[in-house]
Length: 78
Image (cartoon, rainbow, N blue to C red; front, side, top):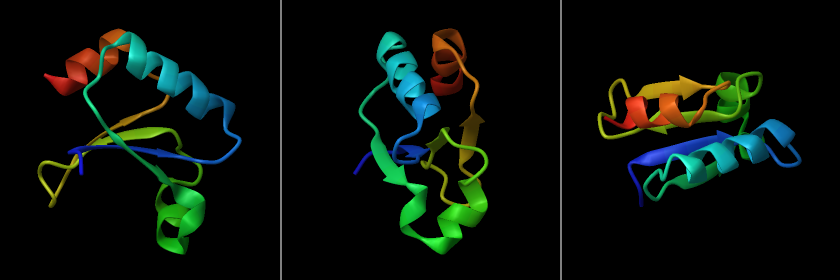
């Protein structure tokens, strides 16, 4: 399991763009989580996806909301 999580939805064109940006930024391995799978995730992330979360600190993991570009992802990962 990775420390990075990309919250996304099925059939989400913004999520597809986010995947391309993560590839451009040479982001390390991450897990994809679909917010439609649970009510809690839908309520928390439904209107915000895609969201990249750094889960290394379980109490208050940092999050990067869309829109983001490769430079923003690299800065977030530092």
